[in-house]
Length: 165
Image (cartoon, rainbow, N blue to C red):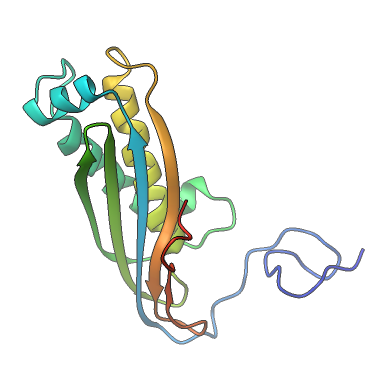
């Protein structure tokens, strides 16, 4: 079975492989991912007030997101272990029913941190769901995507306007 070039996680016979990055030079890598959630307005009010029974929703979600960035290679089968130098999670209440989670992950390494930033926001969102499901079973993740990345051979990427949903 011949595999077209462009899928670096497959060898010439179509078998999964981890990409060899050993010869690549280290460089500063930064990736920003975004996740948007839809919650009932009453749920967002409880989060803002800090009155969800399980505790500080955003604080615990932030820690979960940071931990997820550090554990990405344990979750994504062909992902490399990276020495992450920073992981930051921020939240923004967009309107009465939407919450945005933004993660920025940085490393000085041989491969990018896109998967770490995406995993970070995904786990932060799932943590919010877990902590709030007793008051709102209709919580939805309505968007998850890479916002930007810099560093490495492929260069910089920034999502264009109007292409994120």
